[in-house]
Length: 225
Image (cartoon, rainbow, N blue to C red; front, side, top):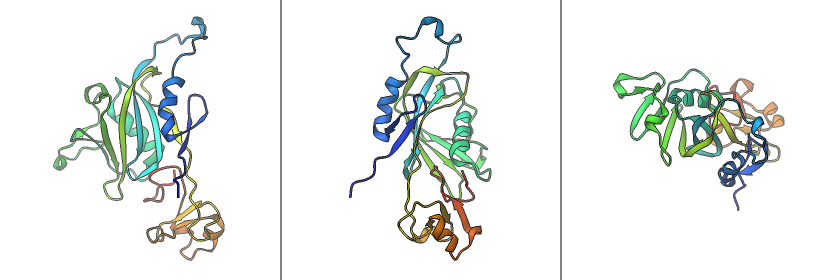
């Protein structure tokens, strides 16, 4: 059986593209319009950025394209990832880059450094690194520096360039309707993803449920999106 195409939306133009073609699309979508009058150009120069691709290490259907200012800090990337995909209970988190760990709250016994380091000092095009959120029920992300984003971003903010569409997962009880709830007690046995009708009749009760959300942390800890 062929795998479904993983689609997403470009935040710049609002059009849909597959995971495979989005990178190429962004190269052209990001170029200034040659017909744009000079007077309409932004008054302030925009910062040069790294173009990052992020996906779930064990959930490739979840992915993002980001523009991150070269002069910004690693902490700004971690904050953005926690906010859009991960934050549930204030867990610890850390990047691992070239064998070195940069943590949100460094632990001496793990020989970690803080995240208050400029990206221009530690990143370069082609580099692949990881991000962990929660050292218990860990959600791990994979990041790749696709290149430099000449279009730049305004200020020091991380800019979302594209994001995957929410995957449609069939209810594991009836197999007909899309799942909207996850029973955290039953998901490890392959019958925890439930549609609304099956959730209403599920024996574990609603207190065991988490909502189906568009994130690689779906169904983990207390994450609700």
